[in-house]
Length: 176
Image (cartoon, rainbow, N blue to C red; front, side, top):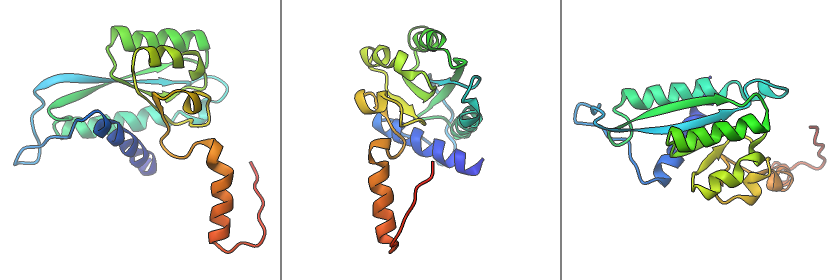
């Protein structure tokens, strides 16, 4: 869980910095949140065929939000986290993303969905940044509003070979 929280903090901290916000604190170390809340949406395939690979995400993001809000929020703005489970259904996923953007006014989305290709154009049209965990899905290669938390799959094999060379390996095998 600690590793997952660090991962979430790193991703969302990068998002916050990119949006030009800062975590504000007072001389006592904690500032009272006085600004309007910032809504961040999480779209998750938390049920469905590949759900076991993403179910850690929502609790980790919830813990991160609790931590930031306890410290006074982001520049005085508490974070409102809304988690939606698309059940790995493309139609459900699109309608939930539309709801997060238009009804809930989410300023950013966290992509834990396996059906994100169905709503990638929608978020791009609405200028909503997306931070993802599944950086091997198509939108992370084609959509400038999708930000991978790390390396994308197109560079994976070259980096594995590079790491093996640095380690002095003479032979290598890759199982997936």
